[in-house]
Image 1 (spheres, rainbow, N blue to C red):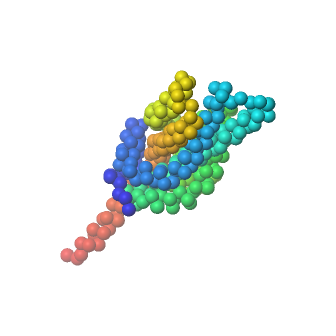
Image 2 (image 1 turned 90 degrees about the horizontal axis):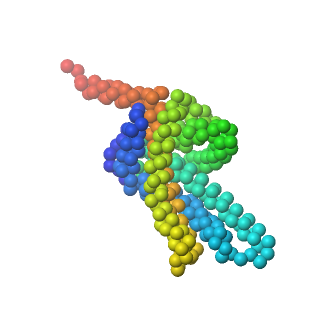
Image 3 (image 1 turned 60 degrees about the vertical axis):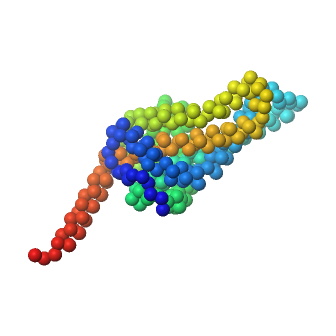
Length: 296
């Protein structure tokens, strides 16, 4: 059993800056255990996403640079079809790996909360496998609905913010798909703009960190454009792209944890569960104390 450095009360009302501070405090306090959990349960899909993305980019760059010489229209058509299928697999693996990361993060937070800060990756996996199928299928469906709704006067943006709570609600409250969606709307009511602002700021921070991890890939692209010897090696591009993609997916933990703290903040604001738990603990403590007083 691996103990986290410092117990953080998840069920607590927090303002905007407190939620951001709590996000990075949680990451610092649990960095090694959280990283181990992500490495064990997210890396396989992240690797698949990275390799697929690297192969796709190598094919596209070959097509743009003119290094592919097609003798017939059939060869050209086949190349485009393979590239299109490659793009589909890249998008699928990227989407599912991000949802699995969110599932891993929220399962970690649930274990952290329920087991008094002691987190064992095996305990995290118990929560993950219980919700894995529901989260992936529900997440893909929500992503599709949100994407299609973008064409309906910004409805997609509204739904995207509301359903950003989808995974944490499903994992923490153990609800089915319809109940989870209804719960998201209930929690977000009157708090859409606050949630939107938190997602934007956390996403910006995440984007800056992700950009730093993508610098080697950018450098390779520039050197390929300048025709630096050895930089046209597709294997090198695939390896660097894979590493960059895996790190980029890990970095989604920043947004996931920030949204997690927003969920606990909204539950506390609307239902005061943390205060009720504290009152219950105080009541039990007083009962235990009076029981031990004896007769005088």
